[in-house]
Image (cartoon, rainbow, N blue to C red; front, side):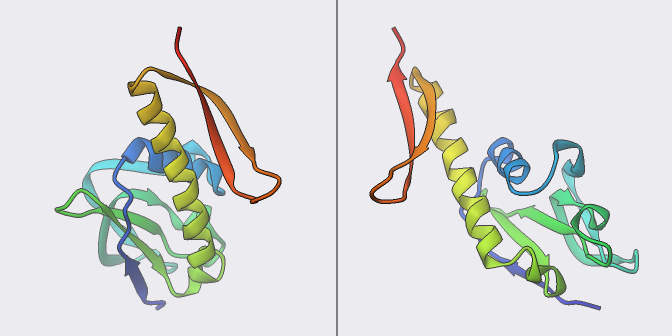
Length: 138
């Protein structure tokens, strides 16, 4: 059995997390969102001790994969649960890209709340950094 590693994150917004997961390899129908934490399942189909509210089931992760889970903590952030085996594909680089997508969706959401219109994103040709563009709503 592959051990689960969990890592703390700054992810807080469920809606933005789901959108980021959709941009990083999963479709909306592959992502489960639960009000109460559900058991994660290993590649044998057995319940693990870890529970999560946002789950990508193993059948969507890979042929001999374990579930990937995001568990809400008491401070409102999500801990990320990924097995050692699944870190080959969904390791730190994947989590970094997921976090970048998440941050962009949070920014877009906050901009809309403040009355800005999202115009899109582009990569700055000099710095290589992604820029999110807004306009003031008339």
